[in-house]
Image (cartoon, rainbow, N blue to C red):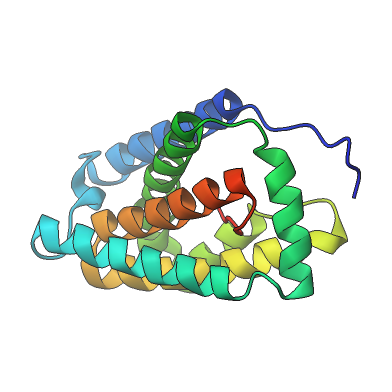
Length: 184
């Protein structure tokens, strides 16, 4: 891979995720007449968030344990170059907004309509990269999409969003220092 690969400006990702979140809220409003309806937890809100955070931490740990597998190591090097120069605030903002927006779109809006597996497949497709050496990114996204979808089905949107935010936050913080795989 080219060492001349530019970093990704966090503000561009924040704009992208803002649009995704807006589309999700508009879609939820059109679907149910209440844009917040699909964002409710299944059970107590605090429990939903705690379960989601724990799932996210466990998923991030599993990715970290497999980071030396050659295709994952290649993906990690690619992602490290993308976030080179990011601040902690950049990484935290992207991690939080991407988890909140993508789960609103894929889980809260689409999964009840198209199902868990198609929503997870769409999540994987959104992580395709035009470099076949990075084939693990959509594979990881598919696996995590299935996990996030199952968490959404059982505990609701706050749990899925908390899990996604935790995965991205832990991974982006490690990538800034050179040591993680991120799904985003």
